Picture 1 (cartoon, helix red, strand yellow):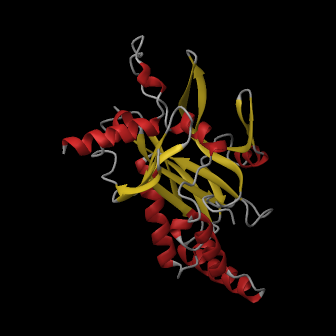
Picture 2 (cartoon, rainbow, N blue to C red):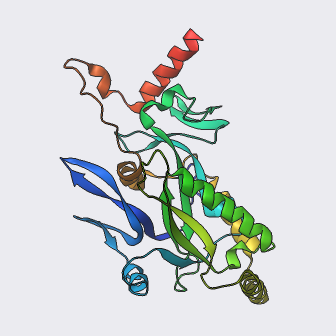
Picture 3 (cartoon, helix red, strand yellow):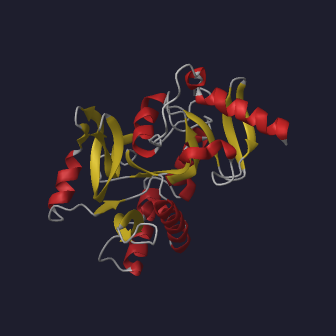
Length: 298
């Protein structure tokens, strides 16, 4: 296993509730009120649709607002990883990843472990550069039991809801999370900050029309059937845990540029005055200089 390379669950496609559009010469994220399932291939107009997108959409009269899924792992943290993440918008690479207590930050002299006060209290996170960032891997269909579709989000509502659901579902199923028949469901809410405009977020529930007793029985039967043929769920979870811990950052340079466009767009900032050469410095260099300045003034 290559050291420093996080081994993530195999991805067959993406699940999103929005897209990136071109406006005034800039690539900006645009929210939607339904799911879209895409492949891993991009064309001129964005990500190419996965065949499952039309198949599931047709069954829901055009609006894809629920997706039947299963999970790969019994451990909630393996299915859904969430942390505070700061990307370098120039290179598209992650620079700092933390959990609100500690973080791993890429500096000029290598990787450092530092305290993480969360974006609200971190002077390096100004301009909404650092956000909560979650990745959920789910299985759709039966063609590839170890291949997944990834849903990415920087929304607190989706992160909070998915985290709670995963832990609750694991508890009530007797640690049979990977055997439960589940579905991703799109929900909406309005807040004072949204001025009455609906905000859409993702929930994870039992399959629609299935009573909890029926779902739990189905999970137990599937678990027993898998054990009978030698399927080792505990070993699968252990292998995934080892792979994810093999690298400091989960995202690689191939995917992170498109992730920055969709989830970490640059704020509207005034242009740099002529002759100001600081704009050519990388974000890592700026972060390190800022940290040294704060340490000197403390």
